[in-house]
Amino acid sequence: MWCSCHLPPAGTTARVSAQKVRTDSSTQKCKQLFHIKQKAEFLATDPLLNCYLALADGRILRYDSAGLLTAEFGNFNFGAAACIDLSRPLRPLIFYRDFAQVIALDTRLTELASLDLRDAGLAQCTALARARDRGLWAYEANQGILYKLDEQGKILLQSDPLDLQLDLSRLYFTQIRVSNHYLLLWAPGEGVALFDAFGQFLKFVKLENVRAIQTLDDDHFLLSGAEELLFYEVEEGVFQTLLLPCGPFEMLQAEIQENRFYLLQEEKIIVLLLSNM
Image 1 (cartoon, rainbow, N blue to C red):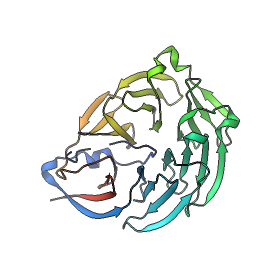
Image 2: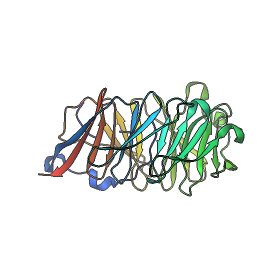
Image 3: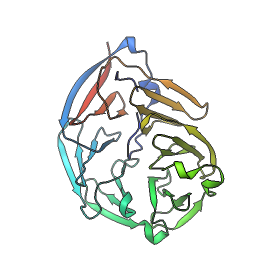
């Protein structure tokens, strides 16, 4: 596909400027900075231009802005990570869906704290992300309820059961993305359930071909699919295709940080610089 403008598994809530990226492709060009030879399940990036890779064997690798490996974390008791939340870049949060576990790391990727969501009654939590106030948002699939928790796992508030609004038999929510005023709960192949900042359900937006979602600045999200990259402006409900003269590239996932594009391929990650001609 032609590099245009995607979301992850996880896991990430990196903040970038939508205005910087949304430019006329005729005035810009792409340059490859470096590539990382590594097979990964998904990637996540932060505003410090670090790139985190989640591997199938459970390891988390961090590469710096020059593509050098700077840290590694592995908790092999919980298998592969489902999400890496980097909304606090110096405090990565790792979610292990199969075991309902959350682990907070420090700058060296050393474990700081852990939380067993089963203790909060959320044994079937399938999606998790940090809230803007350092709490957590968690979706419990058996109950069909979105919860807000504090960092110790105490429930602070909850949504109404989603089966009152949606047919949950065909929706498997795997990711949460948080912006200033909204929260997106994503079911791959189907779409996103949109909530306000207090966890109240607003509507369901159909998104059939999206592969990943990244939170941009304010209330903009970046959607990456097999054939295109889209900006989603929540307030206006508008989708805008982003076209960049970088392709063609085969892409499983992409994220944007400032003027960098991180493209996940089968066996490597390509990092591109978008600059004025």
